[in-house]
Amino acid sequence: MNWLSSLPLWITVVGWLGLAVLVALVGRLAIRALVTAAEYDDAYSARPSRRRTAMPANASQISRCALLTVMSAVS
Image (tube, rainbow, N blue to C red; front, side):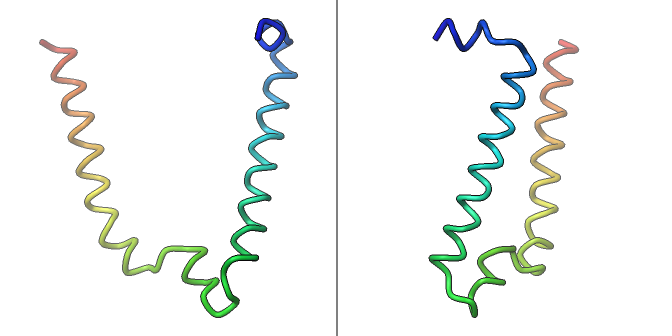
């Protein structure tokens, strides 16, 4: 693994970006192959009603984590 850490930064960044693009393309093709056309819209994106109910819960959890971080830094 020394060869991986000795590579220049730009090669590492380009390599990881390439890997991320490859994973995204393979995932997209897998979804298209496994999900029927009628169910594709529901599987590809969350329904708006689900997003609306999840967002306040996500925001409150993030604010709790921020509050705990600030409190631990102060004390």
